[in-house]
Image 1: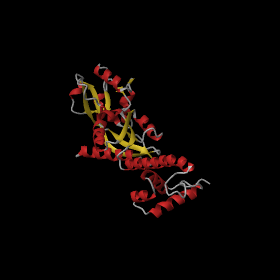
Image 2 (image 1 turned 45 degrees about the horizontal axis):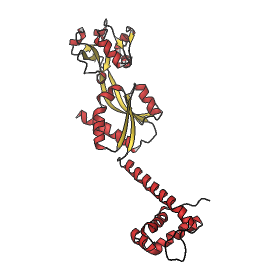
Image 3 (image 1 turned 90 degrees about the vertical axis):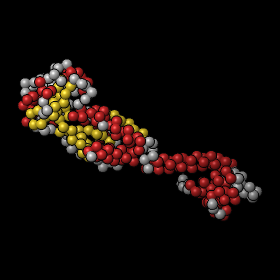
Length: 295
């Protein structure tokens, strides 16, 4: 049967070696000398071999004790290191959080979120990945990341979601397009214009504007390619406001007022699975950051 080693007797033995004797070890550990001697005897009984030579009045290790001492030191150091690391993670002074987000959130919201998070939790390592909404959800389900910020299309049993914000849908077109001068648009005003569908076009499904999708002959999923087509004047598209790249001066975003459609953005994690301390801190920080933006 493998003996169970308690840490305190190991610390006593190491103190005897480091301080040069039982009396000095007792003083160093703020314990009585009999207590130190008893701890060593208990350790020897558990191991079945003496650790110190008997009868010479000096703290000399037996050959068995010489073999054990460096291993005891390694065991105690490993315990203390794990204990410190666990405490650091629990108190958010260390750890790692893996998070994924849809591109519009990754580029528009995450810079501010991460800048303030790093300032508050400088010891936590962060990995951010981006991808379309289904990919982000899948990465969370498989455990590749702990948290995802993505479009909430339909509830998934494997995911727990927390709504974060609503992102209004609008029409994006080139600045010289006839629709660009409008303050808002009714879906009927899009009829007759070449509509380029994209990954968020499903938001029109089930609304009065759904018929526009059937008239569209062009689908582009990549945002860079979509932007290039819009700037070339090939057509118009619908996008959530966060997905509209404002740095493209030649493009305009016009809210779609009838029907008023919104993309729901939420924070997702695996259902019935506890978050690591670092991920839990990130979850709270994201929600607090976005709540502050509303005020």
